[in-house]
Length: 407
Image 1 (cartoon, rainbow, N blue to C red):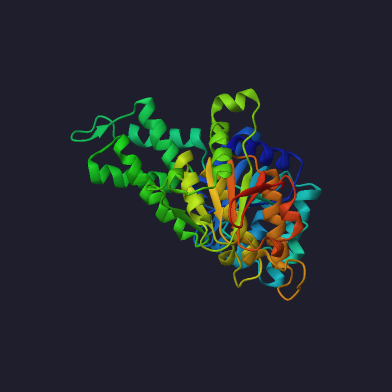
Image 2 (cartoon, one colour; image 1 turned 90 degrees about the vertical axis):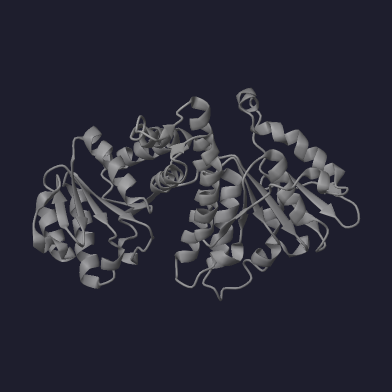
């Protein structure tokens, strides 16, 4: 995933896209990535922060450049040489007309001749309408499994051989730790390992539980996703539902490497419809336990926030986390309560419709093995486009017994 991101960024830079907006909370990792990109493209890097101003090769160019407008004036002259200008946490300074106009003119000069590019790194997306045509938004992906392995190896290498510290770098241990840590940022992985090191005076397979506990806390911080414990659950606890259980057991093997190599596609998900209290939530937990996958509960009600644009950003962040933790199961409970009435009201400025569109597109086009388990009480309240084939593999309905209907 990271290599695809790097290739896309290099294509856009070579195509003279003037401003790239990198949406990420991992500023240090993003800067490291752009150091490699700048070397590939033979361009120097000049960073800007409000505390240090413009910085080249670790040296502050001018104390006055902490002022954004002055920094822009100086950047226009520096941009005549091949340069990647990286602007960190710029969004608060793009709220007055003068700064917006100056940054727009800077982008236009880049597009029409200067051999440079502007890169904005920010944990939030706030783009004034005047700059929307100038900016291309990219999400820096969280570290994938292979990258997490390298992070763990680099961290453990620093402590290997220290007296009183035991470091197990066997392939099996690194694999187990990496799989537990997938979905975390680089700094979060390192924090988890540091905690395990202090607590146990070493790194071993026993620290998988420590990472998982830390991971649960980090997932909860989003306020949208909840990490659900399924340790005591199993499909045997579900009474009846034989159709559903048979379907799930057959598709468990779809996530094996051998199945993928054979051409078998990952299942997209199922919807379970029934009256309250019929065991829908228990089914979601039992599936995660049977498949030995993390269960993330997506609360669509919490996606909708008060600030304009933040709801869409919340949804993107939640879906990115779901894919980063994959293979995983995303549980959307009582989905009709969040999605009923879509398209019938414009009182929210179309936010609900945009959120719904983002969810539909992701369900249809997602590239990672994320299984969506949705539950509903009243299927007639759901939009028809959610129920068509391609969103879910099957829809199961349980009035008295359990029956399967075409999705």
